[in-house]
Image (tube, rainbow, N blue to C red; front, side, top):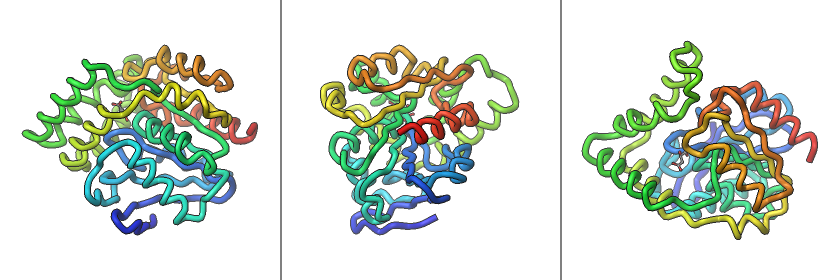
Length: 265
Ligand code: MLT
């Protein structure tokens, strides 16, 4: 674990292995621990998993303002780590929104993009209203409300009750409970305000892999399929038995897909 001082914010980054750099960006409201099943990737890659501003071991600085700000933080972090070009960028859900901003605004840093359980569209009004309601409840009652609201929807319905799923649920709960209410509230506002990325992403030509859980109800396979209209060169992998947290639910399939993609590009 390294602490990287970017001046206005101190980011924690977990880095393992050597080889082509792979930058892993976590979802909301998690941290680098959601990638623990990807540790075997460090046998052949330099795996770099930061905690975004306010999450995990990273400070919030003046607070989370936007998804673009989180992306600019990662770009500055990569410069500090001397990862100026040639990395492979992978982001799940909110991490996928951050990855899209990086792909558009810092394209020279990356030679491959992996978007996992995410989407290109902005929020609908109904989703924005749900986020505002959740933020108000978290403000009143704390982070546990986010855990109660989110955990049941994150994993595949078909695995309900299995011991492996219970372990993943516990890990998710632990991460959410360790995220401060301030970070959850600010990130919900940033998620709600994020722009539609369809036209900007149409200009991104880097090799792209899309991965989605077959049973993801937050960013379902249909949402990921529409990315192919915008990025026809992308490949789509739909992983059975997975909800929104594919790398945690089926790490062996996910890791194999990553290794194959990196070998191809
Ligand atoms: C995530 O997993 O990062 C969130 O579900 C993102 C979102 O709510 O759009």
